[in-house]
Image (cartoon, rainbow, N blue to C red; front, side, top):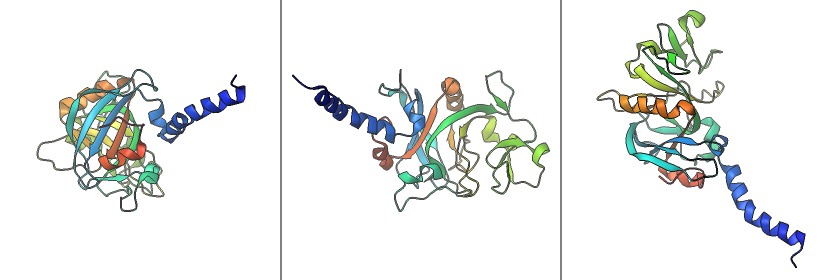
Length: 239
């Protein structure tokens, strides 16, 4: 007869690898049921692929929803967000403001926004004066506010004047003003003949609208070079 201790050791040996794997995944992925994954060939590529996934529960495998589609990323490629710099290899860049790189990492997709009014729940209407602050010396760094509140001397992006923002989604990007770690990260409309973004993900207008629908009940965005997927083995679907 097998002793209780032997049974315990057998179960522990069986469960430990799965437990360790779950612990190594970014926390947002552990409970996510909807995923938008953006991958590029390398850290300097400006063209990427986007694909949507979902799963019935956090313990189920990811299921692809449709084929991969083209996406535009930073004018100088991507760089690891400070929050995910532990995944970076020695030669890979880390995100700083103004580098024109999309931040690699995993983030919650936030509120939908646009230049026109909408009844969509949580929608952010970009009216005159709406600004995203990219000045790391400002207490409002990496937040969306109004010129009426912060004045015109604080550096920021006047969002109501940006045609790419006629439809978009906020990305809940972690704020780190001390490291000037990047700010104002969005998913937005891709305009014709544009070859790269300032650090966001850009898609055709109809695809941005589709993502607004997809993320309405909650979704996570993962941005990675293909070479880094193995560093999160078991956390993300095989692309």
